[in-house]
Length: 383
Image (cartoon, rainbow, N blue to C red; front, side):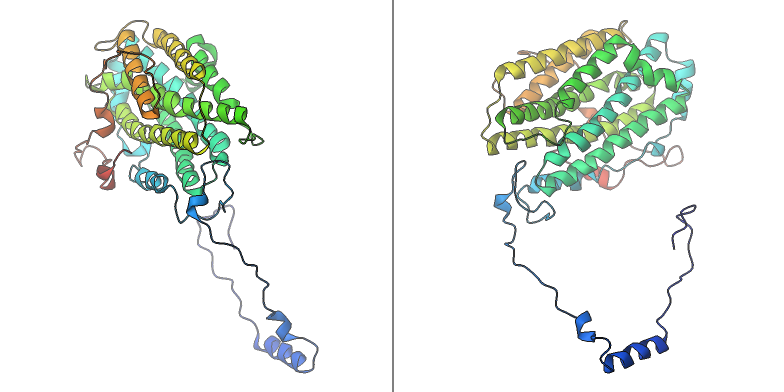
């Protein structure tokens, strides 16, 4: 029996065999007609059901058996799950000792301001992302191959939150102060509040996605989450820390964020593909004004946030650099979504090195740090 005070402790087997005398007594009673043994072996009633036809599956509003994984209609979703498991890591795998020294003795006040506020925003955002996928999106999916990747995504968002907490704790920052900044710093709060407003409207189980207005709202919410929240805000949001890394500072934190960035690239790509699939299957046309409003709101929130974290530029990085890259990435996400118009025509990349962060292979000295470039990690591909 499991010891709830020590679940991992090995317990002696307490399985008892049936006493021979008991068996003999049962058989004797059966011979006398007191027990109908054949009644114990009565056949189980069955009913005939049609096998699942994968072509009948739908992303949402489907009526096939949600518990039957295969045959797949969306094999690409299963491949996302398999690929995600190749990027397996924990924050304990990365050596943070040098970061402690860098923060205490090498970072300028402006660089500390950037570092702390990036972590403050990210740790709140990943909890929001975890809840959105687990409570607002995953339950609406009616094909299990979609849900199983999203279950992995929920785990990854939890892992990311652990990573930020590990960085905050290792550096020795005031946790209460860091975690509360999104509540007391208007520029951070504005960004979180916008996300909450757009995501909370679908954070309920009674949505009727056969209703066109509800369906439109759900797809717009998921599009915002995949293309903006994860595809732009997260993707671009790590870059101030990467700018420090490029100067040899806070390399442990930056390496943690590289692994997170790999996850987020897949999250965004998966979400964008699901949105496009829903649009095809439901023959849904999105309101161009709603899309334009999404990009404008996202940019204004990013501009306010950027003006705060980069109120003074740091060496090699500025607010203009950050916002220019946001516009460039937003255009890229719009193209991936198949939208007709780029939200920021003519925007050019201001951080040509940023994409390298998701693909960089890191050589490790075995005697200096634990190996974090897993054998399977080198085989990652990006759908």
